[in-house]
Picture 1 (spheres, rainbow, N blue to C red):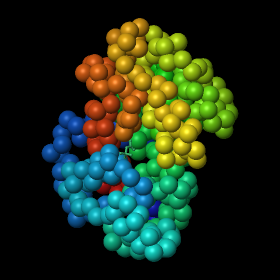
Picture 2: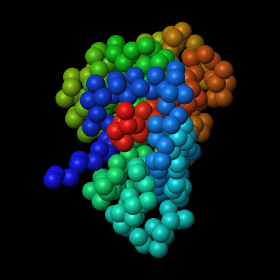
Picture 3: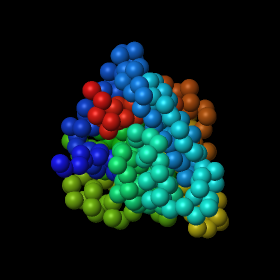
Amino acid sequence: MRKKEVKHLISIDQLSTQEIDNLIKVANNIITNPNKYKEKCNGKILATLFFEPSTRTRLSFESAMLRLGGNVLGFSEASSSSTAKGESVADTIKVVSGYADIIVMRHPKEGAPLVACHNSDIPIINAGDGGHNHPTQTLTDLLTIHREKGRLNNLVIGLCGDLKFGRTVHSLISAMSKYENIKFILISPEELQLPEYIKKDILEKNEIEYIETNDILEYMSKLDILYMTRVQKERFFNEADYIRLKDYYILDSNKLGKAKEDLCIMHPLPRVNEISTSVDNDPRAKYFIQAKYGVYIRMALILKLLEVE
Ligand code: CP
């Protein structure tokens, strides 16, 4: 008999727009009827293997599994696991897949979750690998856009900050490029521009319109979404460059003067200085509700990968 194929989520590209739309539909249903879902994962265990720091991704996955009636185990830093003794990712995964039903992992090395899924007979979810991918942040972003704007098409999206190392931006561009009439305004200093391969392989290949600028105000009045990002200190080789670039953009109330009244301001968080706290009370600031939506879309994803009806 053929072995059943195990489903993993390593990159957002694995999901069709129909699958994304279905996940959003389930997440919306969970928001409306949480009680219907509270025993869906009774007896199931989620393992969170975090080789890099996290607040939102790890805790929202744990919250998601607990809200589905399941249990959680795991570690939150490589130094408290046997990685510190030299154990490989492949061996860790082979062992943990005997302790849990589904694994969420974050790792500083790009491609580590792919190695994991080749060594696992339970689903693996990539919770961020280096500067590469962060598919469940993208699902969170898509649910946020859908709930706040009511659509995933016909949008002008400003992406601002560290577009070079920001994995959330890379995954979001990839996902949004599948929807109709999307235009990107790429706002970054020259050193932190979007990598050429993303421009060529995603934007140009799919004939998606984009403009590059280093001026956050230039297109502010045109934006439907402003997605701010943190300069990724942990990916810099040179501290002097980080210090020079870290406060390049600080969004404050003055800069929103010409913005649309229904602009949706997003940020994957954590924020450092790139959004002034004075913006937090602006009704257009959606970054804290965005973090909360992460729980519901991750609940929907766990149900999908565990094939729970
Ligand atoms: N947005 C995000 O991935 O946050 P954490 O690093 O806290 O998980």
